[in-house]
Length: 190
Image 1 (cartoon, helix red, strand yellow):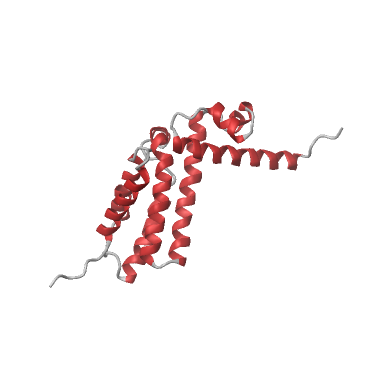
Image 2 (cartoon, helix red, strand yellow; image 1 turned 120 degrees about the vertical axis):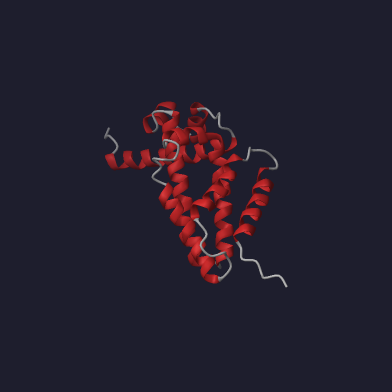
C-alpha cells in the first residue's frame, strides 16, 4: 500500500485547519466557554488534530482573531471601491459589528496576547481601513472633515462589549446609527 503524498497530506491539513477555524468562530461567537473537544467534534476532526494545529485554546483564539480581523480590514477597500461612501461605511460598520460578536467572549485572551493591544500587528492596518472609508466620505462631502480614525475605532469598540442575546443585533444597529450620525455633516440650520 502506498502512503498518501505529502501534497495530499498538506491539502488535508489545510482543510482541517480551515474547518476548525470556521467552527471555532461560530462557537466562540455563541459562547466564550466553547470547549476544544466540542469544536473538534463539530469540525469533524480528532482532538489530537485540533491540538496539532492549535496547541492551546489561546493559540486558536489568537489565530481566529487574526483571520477575522484581516477579513474586516480587506473588506474596507472593496466596499470603498464599489459603493457610495456612506453605504460603504455603513456596510463596513455592520461587518465590524459581526466581528464584535466573536470578540465579545474572547476579548480578554486577545487583549493578553497582544499586550493590551500594544503589540497588535492588526492595529495600524485596521486604522488604515477606517481612514480609507473616512477619506471617501469626506471627499464626497458626506462626512465631517478631519475625522480621527482612532476616535472612530474607540467608538466602534463598544460593539465588542454587547453581550450576546436576542437583542444584540438590534442594539448593535442602534449604536451604529448613533456612530454614523455623529460622523455625518449636518446641513446648516436657518
